[in-house]
Length: 356
Image (cartoon, rainbow, N blue to C red; front, side, top):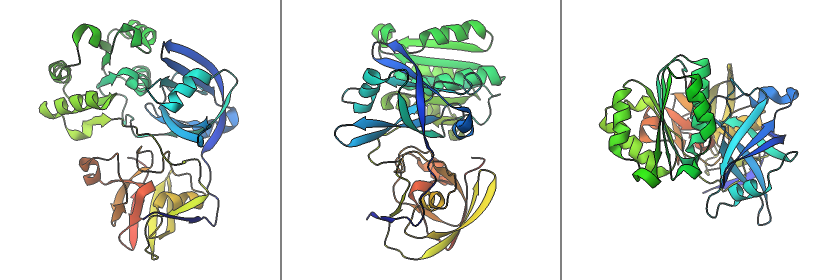
């Protein structure tokens, strides 16, 4: 059962208004939207390659909707500028609205960057598998790895046809600038059919030991993930980006949700942004809500267990997740928990948002 009550304190909002400074038509059904980040809030919008931002989109039907869009920009290249890739989807209200209405000078409400589809070490070899608009966060990682890292980078990029390829010119330029460290396999379904397990496995075998990143339609990522298993790739080296449409309002931080009827209180020790925080944790309230209500800048985006932005690692004690649409069994076994769905099962719990 899900209940709600007014919070005694208003949580610190991670949302800011940003100005659109450029809109580029990438393909007939996709655009890149660039936002300027003013000097006074640049620290709030520092991000890691591969992360995403959440936008508030106006809607006549429900006043507003929230949607997550990956950053194609790199913090090592695009100072004080955020770029997102948006591709139209059938019946996708937000993507169609942005493609039709985003203009230079428009101001939009944006949550600070979040997400775990990131690289802990840019100096290792990396193999990327992108399908369609899944190239967006992959481009951010590719550029960052080549500019700030030292490893070899290979990209398998699948598209419906040549006209649907996003960021083609950027990738061609990258290939020219880094001929010794970057290689790309372009797969067009119009010419070769859907990607095959054999083609994916060939890349995996040629780049054993590489960190594997995948983003794209679910069937495409399922194919790549099965290939990693068959090729014996360790799960810890496989990174999969998954988004789900948000149904709630992640911009509403002035409400403490109640996710159970338990009126008890536990104690949480939380490592966050380099600090060690101790808070009382009502057993019916998600850990994320407790931290936000006390003004702590905990990471989050969807607040409904669908994006992994708020993931933390369980160090001690036990936690129950009311809902989990993103973490796989191996992640949970490794101690990962979603703070937006976390309720304490023990009187004392220790978690860390740092060093995941």
